[in-house]
Image (cartoon, one colour):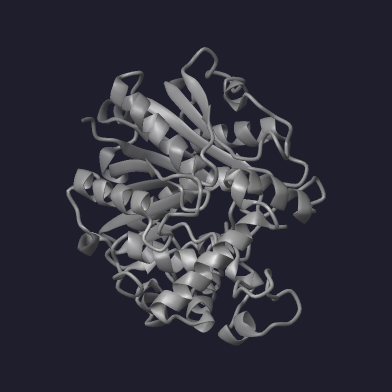
Amino acid sequence: MKKIYIATFHQSKFGKLLGMTVPEILRNAVEGACRQIGVPPSVLDVGTVGAACNLTLNEQGLLAGLIAMVPGLEGKPIESVENACASGGQAVLSVIHKLQLGLGDTGIAVGYEKMRDAQGRMDGGLIGKVLGYYSHPDEREGKSFVFPHIFAEVMQAYMLEHGVTEEHLAQIAVEEYANASYNPYAQMSNVRLTLEQAMRIEGINRYLIDGLPLKTYDCSQITDGYASLILATEEGLAKLGVPKAQCVEIAGWTQATDPLKKEGRDMLHPTGALKAMKQAYEMAGLSPADINVAEIHDCFSVMGAIGTEVIGKAAPGKGAQYWVDGKARPDGQCGINTSGGLLAKGHPIGATGIAMVGWAALQLHGSVSPRIQVKNARAAATFNIGGPICASVCTVLKHAS
């Protein structure tokens, strides 16, 4: 097995891309990453692009062809992938697989989503409808906003089974908004959130589904944004002129998919996610105890709790308490979602999994704001999901060796 290194990570500020077109977004993602290490796109051997709403919201298919329009990338093995909110993570795995197969020594994973119009406005009804396509048809009936409804049910089940309160889960949002204030790329970097505000039902903060506990601040953002990673083998790093000592290794990577239908599955102990994370640790030769940096897929606050359990930092049912006890803070036992997470950094679906891996690498480099930098960052885990905890992409990162 070839070792895979992150040569560089690039992203836009998350939030609004305004009048930027899809071809411009993808070109910026590629050229921006190349510019950071001073190489032309032609040095890249392979590529993959991930997105989820390019057809439904942007009326654009064949994204690989747009990547191939970047000068120097024509005629190369490039593909598009879609795995709902795990599309970005799947793009990373796709590039890794190409490099392992010997299709090249260097590659780029790109992810993006444009969910707002040229004025920065969003059509909430349309977005709710198209995101609902990533659920089972039998579980959409009667749900105006399918995924908030599904995860509101998960939230309620988690609270009942584990004796967790709304306040416990609201603490996750409070911690992540605090982290986002020191991440210049975060959508909510200028917003401050207190626990009292997260719990008080007024203004924008309301219960989204009658009879269920999910509130506005429990939800991730509707976000435009793009992200890209240049990956390379050891031979590829030499071609790029990037010293291995400056890189982070993706030492473990796996993907698992559970049935799409929520009914009949234990959503609080997701089989595929737990299996994928375990395999990623085994591939990396590490354990949860080695990890002190993590980026997890908190599309809703309850996933911040469940994700903490999936990566092995908390026992089943104790994920929310991990946050309440301050263990997930940058100066805690394991800095989780120091980027602000999906709740506050933003959730441009196709870019999310790539941004998770990229931010974890920045933490290992020690190159984020001192206020959110994990001291002596040793190793990192990422957990990216798609659908109702259906597709799970997990990675484990460590310092290059």
